[in-house]
Image (cartoon, chains in turn purple, yellow):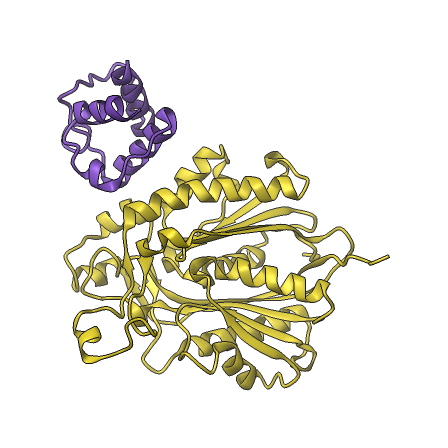
Length: 76
Length: 333
């Protein structure tokens, strides 16, 4: 549920093809070539979508999409 | 019944140091690349004042141009307000130094500190001094020499800032024109994300404060980015509504020129077409309080504004502070 929404946000923010394969293991900066500000914008969009706040310290610990989804699940 | 004046901007001017420092030049100083700086910030070069030039020197030059543009003589100036985080010294204020330089003996002069939002704050103060009959003609200046408080060994901040000054003359204008509304805001609780730690009464200048590099700009970039993108949209919408307008009625946006990624993200949230948003940060970097008045002067001189155009000026900065103004341009082109 959260994974699908997070995937949608990432695809929109990075302007990727809808068909782009994004899994829990996918890394934003490693696999999708996002830079640090893309990552901040994605975090902001996720904060807005789920009505949560993701502090910088938490965001810096995210290694892949799965980490983001788990954080959202645990904090929404 | 009290008559409420319409107050607007009747002249603009800018001053920028001659020396240009490009991204390539910075590649020689710190571990960075032109491509990295451009893609993360949109900045291509910045102006840097020489060692003999202080903030008041740039402010004075910009002020003379604005006065000439407005057709107002120095004797007619009632007040001089300078917005800056890089004053010549703690006191006298930079505004008083500008007064001396201009010979504007009739004016009362003072600085205000609202960091990068300072120009919008100063514009609001000038508007209300005029509406309150404390002044007829106000000189409002945003001026900075940020190069003097940048750590040139810190690649995260030294690429971002530049030096310059912009000035405007504010006075009563034709009814219905000029400033339609201004919104100001602050969040001191988040102030630590953008600051110059030492040099005041908390940490006075000492050998230790200099050795520990506490006189330089310190910034938490990600937090500032998030704050800036959100507040620019929110503040703009609030002021547009307060002015009795809709977003579609706005012809021109001059956002604080800190980072193209912030401007693009904020514009995307507001669904603004790119041609309505003025950008000059590729040439100058972040000029803090000077950013908006320099951009306004350029936009005016480039013929981007017609009489009757609704313009939004929106800024955010250290404090944290933010502010936006809606101005119906009152000058014939």
